[in-house]
Length: 379
Image 1 (cartoon, rainbow, N blue to C red):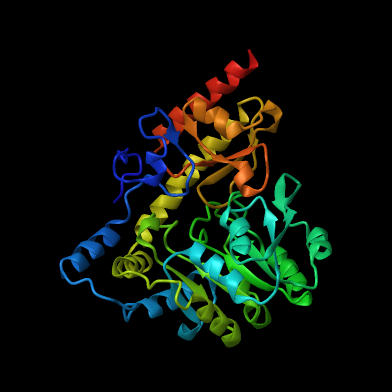
Image 2: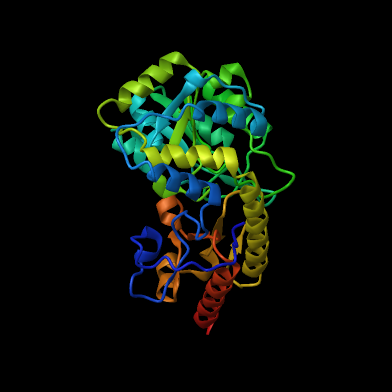
């Protein structure tokens, strides 16, 4: 069983997260990968496959389709057909292909949101329209009226992030139904990034794939999922789309032609082992992340000038720094030894995103630096 308290030195391992601050005393808490060992069954499966010694062109393992179909039904009561699955080397690839696959000129999303949501439409030569999530009763919500009013005749896609990154929301069936009703009425396809679906931390919350709500919604939805965040294997490059509508699926595959490479053998191997063999590891991870979340929320509430809403899912905290009056809070904290994601990259200024998918001792050290930085600012 993984010891989540164990600190693993990731420096000098060609690691994007840590090498960003190479040679500097900065704790990296920015990019969304965790500082934990991958599950033992995943590592063992990769070692076994590597032992074969031949790494030619590959296709998905025979068992993978059945495992994913079974996982979606068991976890989310969502019955899909294997023919709906499209394999991808990464979820961001899926976002970009979705934007290319639709004929409209405008794509809509709600901010703050994962940065590729903001770049994928532009990469496809399309206009991006954003609406801002509103805060209601201490929780972030969709601004449905703004979504309605921002829609134009050439807007044919809404990109959804659920669970929401960076806000940590798990949207309810009611919220998703309301959003879907607007999208269907306005003729918008829904591209739903659900990569954090396995990271629901609140015991009274449940992830609901928006496409599982009805056949009508499913027929207008591209769902993107991956084991990479939940099982900490993003570097292995395995994701998939679930596209029930044949016409949309054909357009999606056509947009992939000549651009998107096949998933590599270790991505397939890791994905199969993660979904099939790692329930105990996953259960322990959720418990540990929940404790990290509770510690972080309590600590941030005790630092004047900082605040954060409750994180229902993910290992990412969205911290409001606006009371500090800083031009660039991410740069401010980086200079004082904590590397955070800049809220501006997510479409909203004055915030930072903190990754608490790491040993508790690392969080304690980082929070000590943050608290001192804010205290020094007030003098």
